[in-house]
Image (cartoon, rainbow, N blue to C red; front, side, top):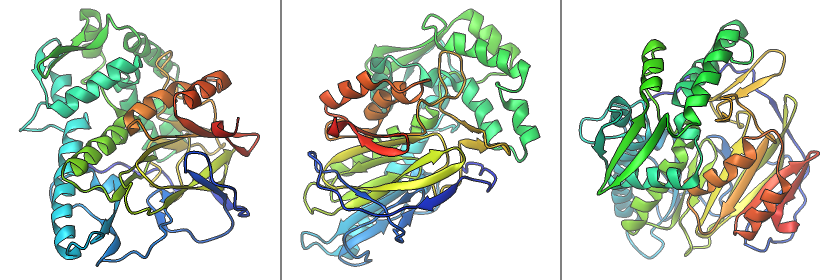
Length: 402
C-alpha cells in the first residue's frame, strides 16, 4: 500500500561539527556530526563500517517485487558469507524468507489491508463483538498492547483524519481536517477520544487459544454508523515497530541473525551479536522549522532502537506529517486524552538490549506524547535498562550520563 507524500516544503537540515566522544557504558557510541556525507537509507543516514557488496560481506537485502509487502518501508542489511557459506546462495534464500516475512507482516498489522487467508486487524475491525481466531503473532501483539495499558491503538478514526490532513496539498485543505483549526473537527475528535479512552466503550478481549474479541459498546457503534467510522483499532505510527519485531523473529528462527532491520520512520532491530558490524543513524533536533543533525549514534550487537520525532526525517517522504506555511507542524502522535497531536520534545530516542521495538515504543510514547518531558520517568527508564537520548536547549543529552 503506497502512502501519500507530503509537500516538499520540509524543515531545512543543517550540519554541524563532529567531535569524537568516549564509548558509552552499554556500547552505543556517540559522535557529534560534521559536514560529512553519510550513507543515507530512507530517513536514516546509515554508516556501515564495512564495504557494501553483492558477494561476501555487507549487502542490502531487498524484498522481491510482486505482492504488497512491508519491504518498501524498511532497509535490511546482512553480512553474507560470514561463516564461509556461499554468499549467492545465502542471499537467494534470505531474500525469499525476508519477502515472505515482509508480506505476512504487512497483512497482519496494517488495518487497511483485507486478507483472504488470515483474520487480521482489518477483519477484527469488521467483526466487532465477535470472537475471532487470529495468527499467533497478532495475538502476541495484542497481548503486548493490552499489557502496556496504553490506548493509542484505539484512536483509529482519528488516525484516518490525520492521514487526510497529512496528505493535503494546501493549508486550506489541511485545515478542514485539523481539529485545532476546524470547530466541527474539534468536536468530533473530542468525542472519539472519549470513546477511545474508555475501556467500557472499546477494548480488546484476549480470550485465549488464539481468539480475541473487539468489544465495542452500543453507543459507540451508533456513533460510528452516524459518522461513517469503519475501524476502531489501528496501530498507526506503531505499525512498523510491530513489523520490525515480527520480521526479526522470523529471521532469527530461520537462523539469519547477522544483520539489521531499519524502518524509514525510526524503528531499528539489530540482530547481529556475532560479526561486530557497526551501523549508525543521524540524531537530529528541530528548533522551529529548522532541523539540525546533532549526532551520529552508532550501534552494534543485539539491540532495539526507537526514534520518535514530530517532524519528517531527512530523505523521508514526509508521510504522517504536515507543515503549514506559518511553520506549524502536525504529526500523527495523538494523545488519547483529547485526540490532539502533541509532543513534549521534538525528538526522543531510546534503546534496549532486552526489549523489542514495540515494547520499547510503548514505554517511550507516554513521555513523548505529552505536554512536558517527565525527568523522573526518564530516570526510571534508565533504571529499567532503557537508555534515552533527548535534547535540552538544543544540546544532546543521555540518561546514561545522569
